[in-house]
Image (cartoon, rainbow, N blue to C red; front, side):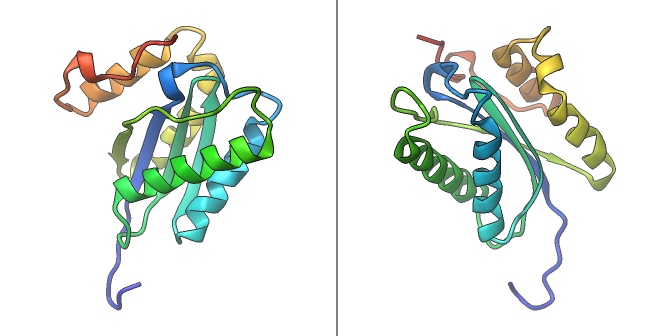
Length: 154
């Protein structure tokens, strides 16, 4: 870390399984969360909350400025997909879809974001992942082209 460098960067990362396939299974998702947490911690970031649904994952962390967000996402995706495939816990080859969302929050919002991520199962009883993702893009005023959003499930 750089001397006299201080930061408070809270970012929620959201990304999907390739083709939004429902591949993350309840019997191993906690191990996935632990693995992703270890990847973040190894790079000196702080996991605040992680949760996943069968077709996507939410990662909320405190990020240090020594690593670009794109590099963090690349490392999480490559390391976790390799771990999933090498461990044999998934019946077919596991891959994350290209792209991701990164949404920043102030310190005052941290607890509400943590609760939101903890309650993904209840949330997704009423809202699909694609609807949720588009809500994030609109809420954060991100310009996007719907044709480049996550690919439809196969």
